Structure formats: C-alpha cells, structure tokens
Length: 240
Ligand SMILES: Cc1cc2nc3c(=O)[nH]c(=O)nc-3n(C[C@H](O)[C@H](O)[C@H](O)COP(=O)(O)O)c2cc1C
Image 1 (cartoon, rainbow, N blue to C red):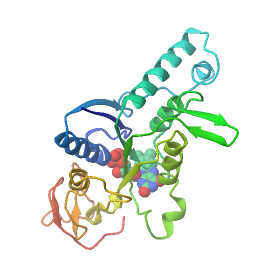
Image 2: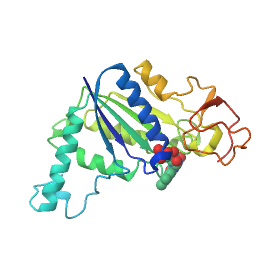
Image 3: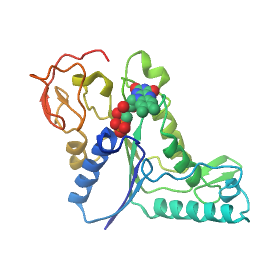
Image 4: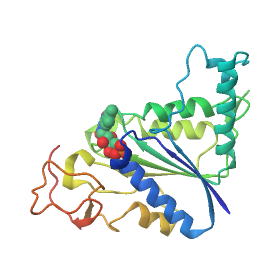
C-alpha cells in the first residue's frame, strides 16, 4: 500500500491548472499500486497563518488554548507527512513565489526536533525515503529566458523540502498559462514513472499544446480554439 499525501494550494477552485494536474498524477500513481490517499486542500480549507496568539504552538511551549490547538494541528500535519511514501504538491506561482496557504503549511511542518534538527554541522533534515512530486503552475515562462532570475518558487520549494530531508523531488511545470494557446506542459527534473509521465504530460510530447480545463484564452479565436482539457496541434504562442 502506497501512502500518498496530496497538498493542493491553489485558490482558483475548479479552474485550477495545478489541481487538475495533481489529480491526474495521483490517479496515475493509484493505478500503479494500491494507495491510501490523504488530501489537504489548502485553498479551500487553509491552515491558519501563525499569529502572536498561536506562534508558541509550533515554536515554543504551548500553554494557551490557541497555542495548544496550533500544536495539535501541527502534530497532525507532521504525522501526515511522516506517514507518506509519496507526496504530491500542487504549487501555483503567486507573485513569483508560492501561495500563502502553502507557506503556512510549511510553517506548521518545519519543526525543530520533529522534521529537522540543528547539529554542530548545521541543520539536518529528519524526513527521507519519500518521493515528492511538485506540480508548478505559472502564468509566464520561468524555466528559461529572462524571467528565470525571478523564479522564487522552485528554488524556494527545493530548499524548504531539502531542509526537512526531502531531496527526492520531481518538479513538473505547467508554464505560460497566461499565454493562452501556447500553454505547453513540459516536465522539469526527473520523471520517475511512466504513469506519472503520461499524467503530467497530457499531450505526450512537447510538439502539442495542452489547454487547461476551464481555461479560455482571450487570444483564441472561437472557431479554431481547441476545447479546454484537450490536446491540440501546437499553435504559435500569443503574447499574454
Ligand atoms: C495572486 C496571483 C499572483 C500571481 N502571480 C504570478 C506571477 O508572479 N507570475 C506568473 O507567471 N503568474 C502569476 N500568476 C498566475 C498563476 O501562476 C497562474 O494563473 C496559475 O495557473 C495559477 O495556478 P492555478 O491555475 O492552479 O490556480 C498569479 C496568479 C494569482 C492569482
């Protein structure tokens, strides 16, 4: 039995590109082996941001009701993460980085003595032996070209995950979503399974274009616009 932890963080509901790709990836994983799935939708049911009232729940000694509740939630999130064999994270790019909901989840699971510890040689991650798949959705193009320098999403996620010992990470990028019909879905990093590859490359090759479900390009002419959620022969990219 594969324990799969699914973390969605888009706040765009049913039109979310990252959530659609996460669903596909999880379905592909579940086809490969029997799976027990725990799902956190941080866009719909956010993990509260830390406040003055709750901080001691994750860093310090909780005493008040609010602090104890935060500690209980943090323990639960850490336990879900520990129990997972595979973690699938949907991470839209918001303002060049990650959604605040996902950031709040990290605030609750990066816990000294639980998921990392300080040693004389520096911090050491305590989680390992898991595969992490991160689906990144972005309006623009950041994997190459001038905007690469302002990609504070992927390096940040890589660092956060690595900090707690999660170094077996596959990044899958859905980029140029804001470009409409030029929305290719290349896969970054290492694709570890055939099922995942097909799930995360819905069109099977880079010569085709994937039109995200529920997404209509303002630049697509209705007569020629491919149906959302389908593959079509690649058109010339339109500017956003
Ligand atoms: C608040 C907000 C901020 C965004 N900031 C960026 C950004 O900095 N760079 C970018 O390329 N796209 C940005 N986008 C576009 C999203 O990355 C894009 O729409 C992506 O599809 C969102 O993922 P989702 O479809 O899973 O919600 C932003 C969208 C929102 C809602």
